[in-house]
Amino acid sequence: MTLNTREAALKILLQSADNRTTLDRSLDSVSPELAHLSQPDKNLCHAIVFGVLRHRNFLDHIIRSFSRIPLSRMDLPVLTVLRMALFQLRFLDRIPDFAAIDTSVNLIKTRNGKKTAGFVNGVLRNAVRRFHTMALPDPHTDLMGHITIVHSIPEWLAKRWVDRYGPDQILELCRTINQVPPLTLRTNTLKITRSALSDTLKVAGHSVQLTPLSPDGIYSMESGTRIEALPGFEQGLFAVQDEAAQLVSLILDPKPDQTVLDACAGLGGKTLHMAQIMGGQGQIIAMDTDPDKLSLLEIEARRLGIGNIECRALDLMKAEPSDFPHFFDRVLVDAPCTGLGVLRRNPDTKWKRTFQDIQRMAGRQRKLLNAAANRVKPGGILLYAVCSGEPEENEQVVTAFLEKRKDYALSPIQDCFGLPMDRYFKTFPNGMNMDGFFAARLKRRDRTNQPHEPDPENG
Image (cartoon, rainbow, N blue to C red):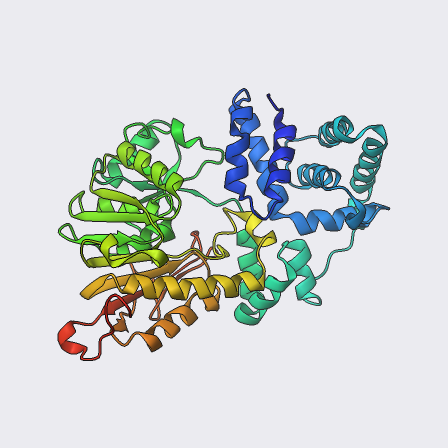
């Protein structure tokens, strides 16, 4: 089966509406049906999908303003088609109004019939005629309404952020979250220098900039770039990784002669960067509960020419002492989290998370961190990281850990690559042009300095 651009966007959005289905998984599942589309049409499909998810509350506000039927009574496909059309009308200058309306009417007509198509047509034409009459909350008199509607932040999250960041910073953060993030490459320094890779990309006609903090990063300044088409991809000269994620591995600072455990490796972005930092030497064990992710990690390792990684499909919480041949010099816990620091890249997340998710994740993170701590040798380093800025997943996890584990001490992260820090590593999308991350560097005390060290297997 093949799909046109808007049919594909609708299918992806309907699939991703399921809380159990990530946007990435929805995109991957529909990808084979897009093979016949031109690259501009694929880019348009992705622009519609991400745009609807970024601006959903704002689009719904428009629908409420010009529809006689409440949103709660609309079928999800009808509501989604309206959102798609209004995103094109309000945010995509290159698509004429008549084209956005006609394609949307035809799309819903095929699914739901003439009567529903007539309703969609009426709402869209009414909106186009009367956009200028639509009232929007003013940030000076109704900050919460402005954030939730104009910037499409869920109310529960907006309340937390207003209390934490204040009105000025929250507005800048929300504006940044709804922008398209840069494509950031990480130079594979096992094969090429950053300057040489940058020159290669420029010669091929690509606009690039060097990342200001990571010594390995390069920004691609073009929208809709197809990664596989970039020069050097097949040769493994680079990987895709946000600058903040690159800095996490650099903070752990693994050495060539060390043994390293990546306890929650996932697809292995940080695993592979650590191998690169180690010069392809030493040993890294990449562990994850999902064997499919580890298979993709192994494929990427071969593309990059990295061979000092051993993958293990294993749950750290259920691992036995016999599962590990030794203790590790460095352990990274890039823990599963709410992902509220990477909403630019995963805008569906803000519609799927709740405060209860923060609490649930924090409980799991505390257990993971304690289990990983048992695998660090005395004098070794344990790095805890999450792509979330929520205190329950950040400082509170570390504080609870240090209260329990007297064999560990916080190793403050200060002046990180010229970025001023206070004890912890923290990044934000606004003002930094990178994802939101948190990291804490923890050092296990030498045995000679810890007379009451917990048993390594039961601590």
